[in-house]
Length: 185
Image (cartoon, rainbow, N blue to C red; front, side, top):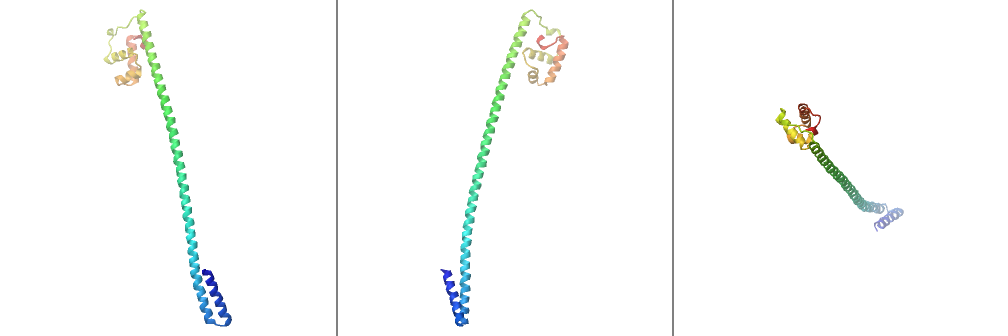
């Protein structure tokens, strides 16, 4: 509607100019300028308002897109962590099963060794009388644990010494008793 009013005053300005009334033509021209400025301001304000709405909508769309992206990243991370935990659980269970199997094998070997030792003793092989030898208390403890079928590592743990120390004591015991291995004890 404003544009029609501006056009009307512009026509009036031309009319006064054509008839030679410069004063009224100048007034009409000032009115056209005033109305044009107001119309331009209103029109630009409306355009700015539309642009602002458009920018707000774009901002909302970007926020939604970022939220969706964040959700996807979080879900992917959670799934990856669950898979890693399941793999670790599988390896833990596998290692535990292997350890149990190894312990069973060690116990079976220990039992077989005890049976072989008993058979050798029953078959007439003479047992060494440890009282005839001058052994230290530590050496006697180690011999007792060897007779129980314990490994060097187990003996070390029980006596709070290293496995190498156990080996050293066994070497000395073998030399003192003049034997070649632990099964002869």
